[in-house]
Image (cartoon, rainbow, N blue to C red; front, side, top):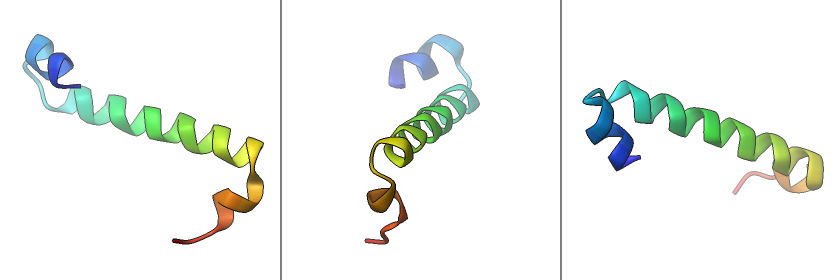
Length: 41
């Protein structure tokens, strides 16, 4: 993400990329192990 920031010169690019990655990871987690996705740590 740091390289993305350096390449774009804009902080919004890595922020949006990180948010989309987190959304995808949580979607996969919810499909693979629904009980773990609902647990609160």
